[in-house]
Length: 189
Figure 1 (cartoon, rainbow, N blue to C red):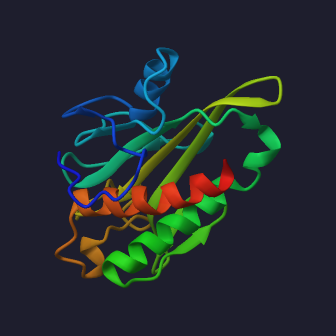
Figure 2: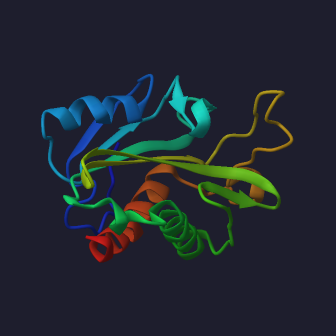
């Protein structure tokens, strides 16, 4: 995977790529224990056991969607991260608006919606020592080209492609999101 439109200084400048993996979030947590570079992105084209909030799974068809986790070491007080998930959602909305000129809505705190259906989700997890955040994991699933969903999700999930963005591209979506997230992250830390 090539992230040619990346304009960041540190987010996604180090990439750990897997063609297939169970969960980028799970892998990011393992890699963080070895103190991989701040801003590293763990990305895959086929995530088989994506994590959602409340123990749910994130369904993603192989090679059709953006599925990745960003690893950060903020070394800040947990209070500094108040509303971080909503701020991440706002940044993703801005990125998609700039990229494809479409408006997303946020179902707080972590769902991205278009035309009443879910197009993306955010899983933000932290590891702390006391009140100091040592590791922040930003997991993102964003439906880009997927045209079919499971029976359980077919009435509640959608993608850019299904919203007439036929030229939607996974790499462009990842770059746009990372570019916007770096601006946000620099404000938070």
